[in-house]
Length: 96
Image (tube, rainbow, N blue to C red; front, side, top):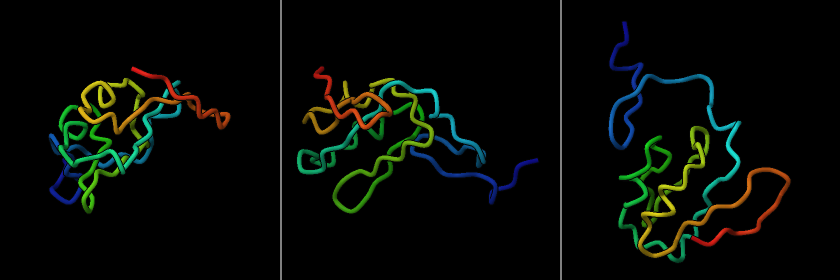
């Protein structure tokens, strides 16, 4: 049975600590432009995987569990997030 120490507090719920990541199959990944971020936390609120944490004046993006769904990009009112192709160093941005 899980105990309190075995839980990780995410933005929306407590989840068991996982030892594996699930982002290895994504095709797209979000990129954060901190200079555009006004810390509204819309990305943090809407991310179904809890890939965002509150940092000092901006959000921090953790890609271990990101599926590349693009919800964060669609919800960001300032355009501080964009999707890029995963792998190969390809940095072409895809406008929404």
